Amino acid sequence: MASHEPSTPHTVSSYEEELTRLNNLILELGGLVEAQLSGAIRAMTKRDSDAAERLIVQDLRIDELEETVNDLAVNILARRQPVAGDLRLVVSVIKIAGDLERLGDYAKNIAKRTLVINQSPPIAPLTTVPRMSERVQRMLDQALTAFVQGDDELAEKVWAADEEVDELYNSFFRELLTYMMEDPRNISAAAHLLFVAKNIERMGDLVTNIAERIYFTATGHQIEAERPKRDVTSLTDVSDDGAVTTETP
Amino acid sequence: MASHEPSTPHTVSSYEEELTRLNNLILELGGLVEAQLSGAIRAMTKRDSDAAERLIVQDLRIDELEETVNDLAVNILARRQPVAGDLRLVVSVIKIAGDLERLGDYAKNIAKRTLVINQSPPIAPLTTVPRMSERVQRMLDQALTAFVQGDDELAEKVWAADEEVDELYNSFFRELLTYMMEDPRNISAAAHLLFVAKNIERMGDLVTNIAERIYFTATGHQIEAERPKRDVTSLTDVSDDGAVTTETP
Image 1 (cartoon, each protein chain N blue to C red):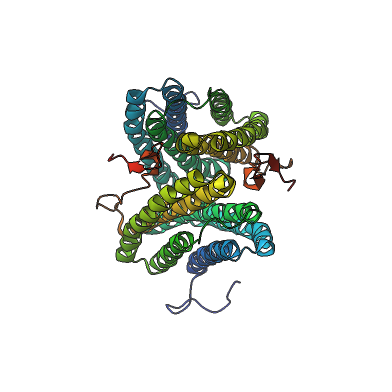
Image 2 (image 1 turned 90 degrees about the vertical axis):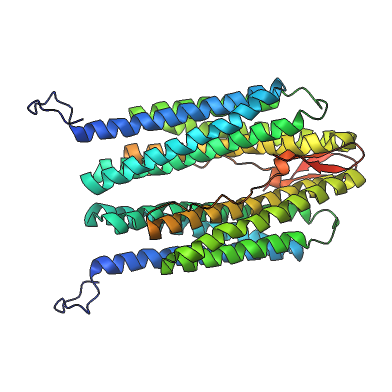
């Protein structure tokens, strides 16, 4: 909307408006992703297949919103030719929108697997998965706050929080392998739960990426602390008697 | 390198040199990723844990190269302020480099899981996994060719080829669940193989993304054909007697 008022220090420039709109779109996209994740986990714990079906369809809104962000960002690059901090911000926004779209894909996949899991009887109380999901949701929420406020300390805090998600995943992975060995009838549902947990663990990694990018955008340099420990289940083995061991990398 | 010769139509401008360098970096990055994937699959089929260990370390080169691409791309955006086709190319390069880095992560994860799988006796001849991997490698190879040649038809061909990878994955997923149910001692190795196959299937999806982006960069509009079918294992169930069924979505 072009303003016809004379330009004064108090008049928000159209360029600033565009950057604000870019920020708001990222917040909207992040909010949608949070809602999809919490919805998918709720559909899973409540065994609500109807809700899961709705979530699968709603992922389209996330894809469309990512397109909108990309279009606006490229448009700003072309017309405004930002430099320094603004350039870093616009490029970061393109990357963050891509990560958020992927987060949405993982949430959609959880909803799809919920449809299958609901066809088998419950194999165990699902307490670990909601706990993992709550942590990832909190990380995402804080990452979005860090993004709008350019808060590098909060971004670093988010980045460090992923360790807890990884630990929950590692113990749940071992638990699931045990259920599978106890009763072969659990195998199908447990295999899908394995992927659900892995999806949440990957979501934690993606939010960690986002936090790194926010830190870089705010400070101009990378986080220097040691990277949090990642999923070690690729080093987890289960012996024939069901004892689970994890190799020290 | 600044040239002191007078500018003539035959003199490559420094800007063109930079764009060429950006292209070459993407090719180099793609080549590294291809080598990591084929190496990881070879290490798995040959049960070669030493090779797997080396591949895990080599992933760092991919991460560093992505950083180099990003730095150069942002540098070009800042100094050259490209418009239209060139702007689309530079933004695409940033996205493609990110996808290639993720492909490298999946290959690294296959190498990590190989270390664990090698601790159990072989559960079955692993023919499907190398077949999936060969198809993804060919897709990646063709995508890189389509990228340097701006060949939208080849990009569309790559995009369509993902269907075959998905079909292989779907049948292998069912096969693995059956192995797990036949003998609980297979469960740990089969669970890791499940993730290996899923990693390759995801790599196929990422190459499909890259192909879409190349098509868009070359033509300025999206691929209009219907999207190839994706992984349907999230809709696959196994009944108590071991019969595997796949729901029609």
